[in-house]
Length: 171
Image 1 (cartoon, rainbow, N blue to C red):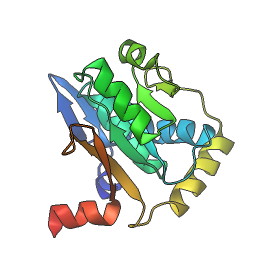
Image 2 (cartoon, helix red, strand yellow):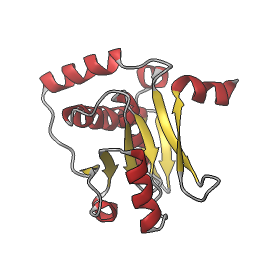
Image 3 (spheres, rainbow, N blue to C red):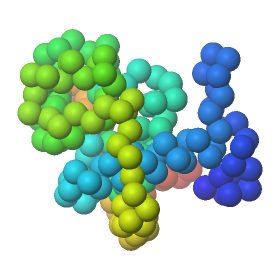
């Protein structure tokens, strides 16, 4: 956030020969956060994200976190059965994906939100979303869900709070 305020045109990420500025990252993430709020997902619930590595994934992760939710990373390389099992076990109701990868979620009951099709937002929706997001960030809230293979071979989910993630990085 401080880099966004100080140097919004500075490069936040590089992919191949393309650049994403902090301002572009923030705008994309904010727009996605507004779309997530419109889905009325319960607070602190994980949201799936099925995207290839790149700018869209970065915007998707930031948008989910800005919305006050945690994310569940779904790997596009997973076999279909593993993907479906983790979606079912996690009980997520929404996933951020692309047009191409969204086909992999057709067999689930998920609401799929396509990151390439931004929904136009009104100023009122932006204000409402900003107010929701500003009250929703606490260290005890969910940051992400990590699925392991489990000792039995069945995937097991572990919920990681923001405090635990920070402790792991800096503790």
